[in-house]
Image (tube, rainbow, N blue to C red; front, side):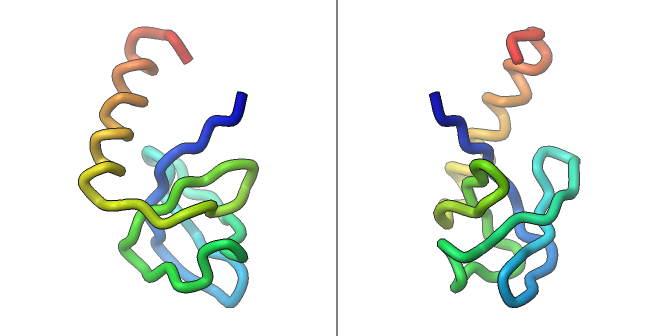
Length: 74
């Protein structure tokens, strides 16, 4: 099963970006989304930004992840 998580881009370098994944900052590759801009959201899987996603969808997804975390499902 593949699971991607939404992340907000905080800083952008040539091939990587610093992102915020539900409060945790991490560096991810952006080879698949080189056009991403600071402030946009991407789906991160295996340390790579896979696609740029809509802000509304990202926030809804984060909300669902938070519900699962509170329920101790993940």
